[in-house]
Image (cartoon, rainbow, N blue to C red):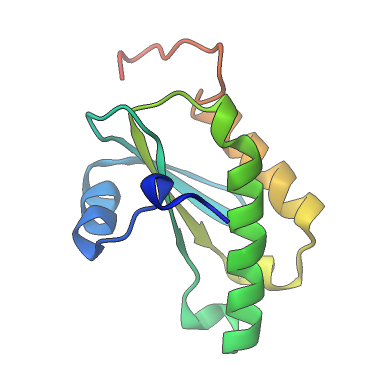
Length: 120
């Protein structure tokens, strides 16, 4: 489980990240990142009704949470991250979700030790 301090909890925060953030897409999920001006990284997860039934959506959200939790200590602070599940994620395993998240974080240059070229 993600610690409460590292979770997005308010709908306004989700809306701000979606409006101001940069997004990267993968067949399994979408990553949206926006600076938050703070000292922590916060993660929010979205799995809409197109994913499937409540059981399927909750399973996908658990997988996304676990993949994000395992990478939190390697991400630089000061960002809000929203992970949006796509329909293809309904049949994915944890390994697939983890690989997709790694690819998106690499594209967005959010891995520890990488310098952001655009100053964010």
